[in-house]
Length: 202
Image 1 (spheres, rainbow, N blue to C red):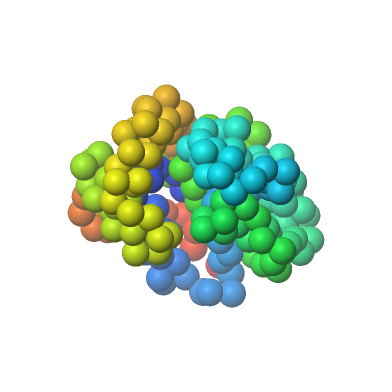
Image 2 (image 1 turned 90 degrees about the vertical axis):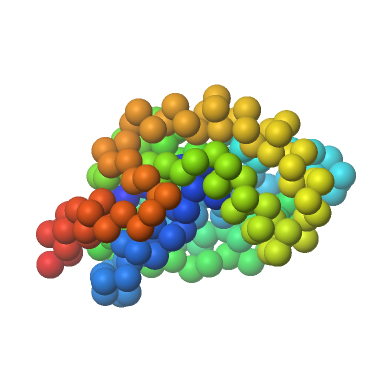
């Protein structure tokens, strides 16, 4: 199994890059695991307390479970990925049954910040985008998909996202094998990644 880690700041375009990579690959050969599914369970906290959690800090992620699931998939086992709700700031009762694939793509802002995960990735990719561009994308997404208002998103960006990005996310660029500048459609970088994948799955 080839495991690819795709990191980058919030709104950097990681999902776009994942889709570009997958576009020309056989769907049955590639699986995706999102770091967003692995936020820690917060049943012991009231909603108001959960809303105050710093979701951009490595402490918020259940890296242990994520690593455990990757190891199980690599060993040919099926895992049940948790499902996380950004509306309730907690895991739901649902799970996603995930089968082993020849290629597993793991994407998320903090996945290169964890040494155990980094060691498991065969290819480490960092998607870079201008900070203004990332803020605009984050605003659009959180208002449209997560029911937030503009003031809430901007406050969170200024007080949490930006400092966490500078402290924990941007430095992980140093661990990347490939850095994809996502201010334009970067066909060369995507083609290089696809070529490596194709070698493994043919």
